[in-house]
Image (cartoon, rainbow, N blue to C red; front, side, top):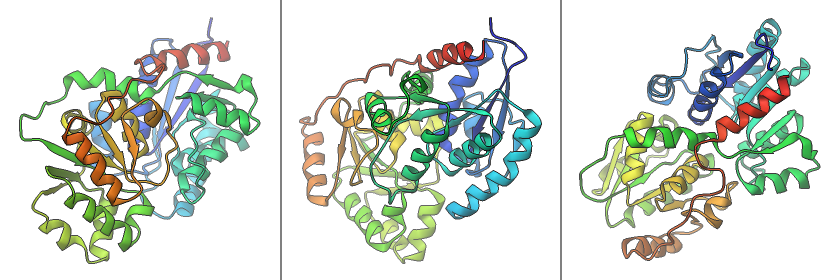
Length: 357
């Protein structure tokens, strides 16, 4: 039987972390193991942070680091500096980190140097593109953490190819899909004309004028309305490059503030298709069986292409072809990947209980 004096510390900092952590925190609650929640504050606006805690019933953080925005080095250093004394004080048996953001790598590094065991949720994903900051984070975390919880078969292959011991790997499914499945029936259904949904935030797409211009041209190719919840950073870059007016003047484009989780999920569920550069949205659209056109050269989530509803879009001509297929109901149907059944958190909890015995 698990020792109830054991302590698990969860570290979250950004929107995808909240969605992945919520069902696991709930599942572990049933064991009686003490849990401590540390919020780094990497995402700090209401719609990118506070609303997720309310909607997903995540408990109030025990500690809030309030690091805010900044360069990769600034954010990583701030988390390292602020989280180390907290981990020393709490002295958890395991620190659980999520995904691939700067908070993830900083928390894992701090815990490892304090000789505290670490678990990585969403381990083994690889884009094989080291120009992506997230790829660097994934590599570091997987090689210093103790337990690798994997969402899709490619993760096991990648970890094995990198020399990670098999007894550290656990193929459990996707906790983000746990949250989606428990929430999707509660979301608002939009009774309106057909629309596409656009999200865009990656540096390769928004940190240069050329990338943003391609996004603008992509919107023009849609024969239906495009709803675009604009990330604060993306809006800043549009203005910086003198493109904000051009986006605002597009007749078929509706720009709005970032949405709450449930509002965005409702939009995604009812969209004709989704245009994105997000990793998590590739997974969520596959789980919803909604066509997803990913505006990237690569993906760290190949199961969404091999089995799901995702297609990589490398140029605008290819985008036009895929949009035409969707509008003619000739787009691939897709299927749900193994273990994306809403029970990943239960599997992880069972494994953590065994570890803590």
